[in-house]
Image (cartoon, rainbow over all chains, first blue to last red; front, side, top):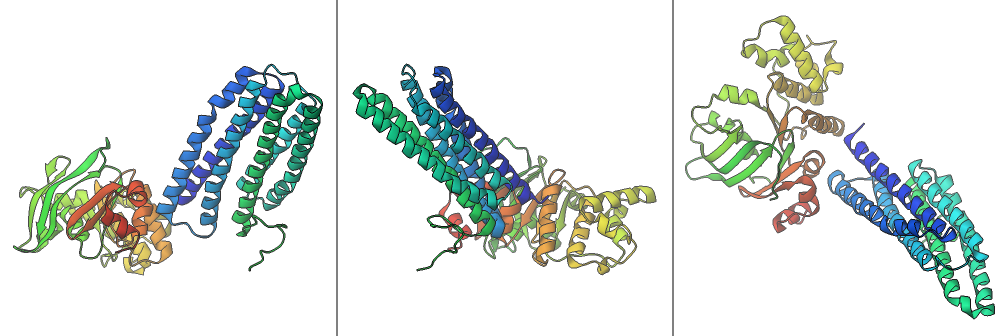
Length: 225
Length: 256
């Protein structure tokens, strides 16, 4: 194996490890809310530094690779994709921390009917992350496109939760504080879906060389002004 | 320059070099060369990088009137001392030039040449040493069935690896590469670059190159020279991402 391929493999492995920490953070943050597990919520908050460290290490490795290897073609697309993915993963972990912090604040509040939707939303968003990373590792553009399509489901769940919370707040003014925090959690999960979409869009760039961000239909070639 | 705990094999101390009485080409250079690392010397034409490289095995002594000042400590012995055995020094610090320099003899005899000069005559011992050297130079598989063929039958890239094998056969500690890939095509260049990375587990390499990108790719440490002075010496990662000297920054970013 060429030295540069070994270096790229190293970067890929670091990204995979970072992604696995991020997935755990998402899962545990919502679990801590649903199961009122204070210890688990604090663990998510405390472990955020691990993801931050990977963020810096991967960025440094990519910068060194660019400076020393002058990547072109596939290598260039891989390294730029890797740098963007690490930024998205780091943001996702921050959203997990936000959720965990709200879970701590809601520890004594009774569950309401939005908890089930939040659980479902977590499941979809986390699956999107998992598949977006898998599409990156396996250079699977079909899976990446599938991830992008799934963002609508997360958005719909967010809308549905917000509607439900507005109804609750209208009926019971005492639950406004709890409902506001739950809306915040839902918003964080919705943003996680957006970041998964960003990752999948970069995988399409990596595999096809097409930048599909901000395009209404990713199957269409870009329209030049 | 940052401090390091890495083992120094060579220590250049206040080295100046004069091609004649009044022509000072190197000016008060101090730098370490770390064991089992690749060190690159870069800089514009005429900056003195090849002159510095040739100091490491006293190549300048081949011409009269040249003069050194300062010290080059090689394993704590000053190799600029008059008492140094130059033949022994050049066995321990071998050199590979810009253009391949195979001798007009067979592939086997080319690699065995230095060993025979050292008095080794046993065919089995010679055979084993030649094979080991050719394997280290990643040439063995390409030539093992034609060791008695003329070295001139090899391609330019193969000839350069043969010359490297010839240097390796006498078991040097340090290899000096003077633009070793500048006359080679991109595939042969890649082979030499990959080879230098594999060789560093057993040898220390100092390479002079006009190709900045090559220095960035293959070296652990890089020295940037200009007008006979060492402007900056640092880890290659550091020098190519955040050099401490503005001159280095301008040179590596093509703003000279």
